[in-house]
Image (cartoon, rainbow, N blue to C red; front, side, top):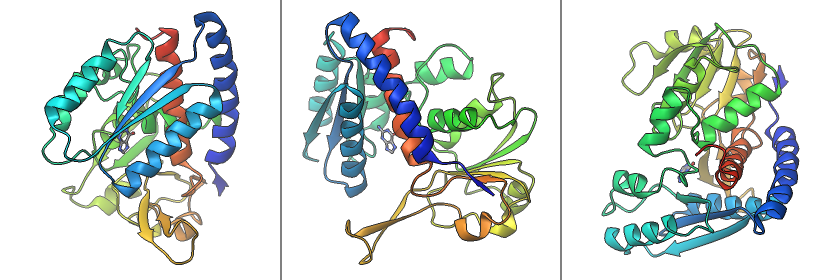
Length: 292
Ligand code: GUN
């Protein structure tokens, strides 16, 4: 088994982004700028947004975190988004999900100018991605493709099984893996909670992407010998063992599955770090104006 090492790959790609950001800053007379809107106090979301902001600063971007209480109205949030859309000095805008129940995430997603949609969630970006046109690609699937590309893993023509059909990961991941591009060209099966004989489906896979959000869901008996296993899970459980007070678990039973896999991502230290890279690259592209 070899490790798909998110720490190593993300560190290398971050250096490339930092260099490009410095060149662009010289050219534009200002830094690339990402705004992240966070609503409420979900522990995971607060941690992720803080990490995104910190990473922006590390590569020489400006970053702004707009943090609202969870009683902000949908109208007020949409008005703020419209204001940011109109600001020429802001390149990228993300609204961290999930949102409180009284705010419609679809309305929010579509309110973001697709040219600033560095999460790649807007229907225009999703449609363009599906058609293999320039677009912003959702950060986690983008990061995974960058990881596969870094290790030059030959997945063309192979069978990929994605577990989980979320808008953020599973669904766009299935599109990217099937696309006529490199990496890509897989025969893809998108599985989910209603899939019958899930174990048999996953057993067929040369590439498994686990994005179901359940701790240790993919077990060794579900994985073919020699498979490439990508674990998207970030399942947080409170723990007295760690300083932060919680511990992260993947969707894959790493200890057992790693005995069968040819390549596997760890949690933490795998896909999570690559998600950040996807976001940074999208923000850089937005500032450069190379996508739109
Ligand atoms: N919630 C979980 N992942 C993401 C992400 O990549 N972007 C946003 N905006 N919210 C998320």
